[in-house]
Amino acid sequence: MFGIPRRYSHFIFGVIQAGLTSLIAAGIASFPSPNPVQFFSHWLSSWLVAWIAILPVVVLAAPAIRAISVALTRYVRRVSGDVRFWPKADMSLCAAHVRYRG
Image 1 (cartoon, helix red, strand yellow):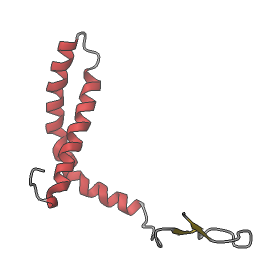
Image 2: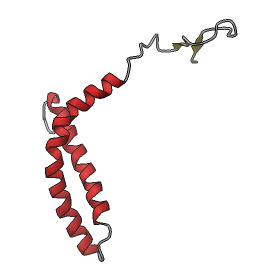
Image 3: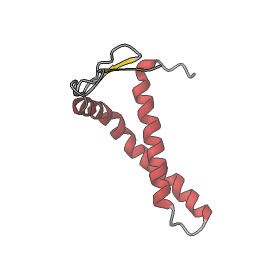
Image 4: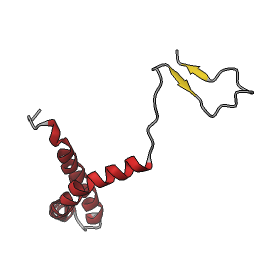
């Protein structure tokens, strides 16, 4: 679309995620404004400050968050596309230990 190399996609993700998160948080914080004009002016100014403040945190913290999420989860090896094994099935009570999708 814009021609930005794919290797920078994590930075683009961080910019979009920080912008969206700070936009929503600033809107919630600005909600008690007495009139719509004051709400929107306060919302936009506080969003810009929040985005500038949170952008470096998101971009720098993303690799650490990804590493933590990988450490807390496990990889599940998929067998063929239409068969799943149930390793915890009690074989004495089950007729089969595979399930076919079809």
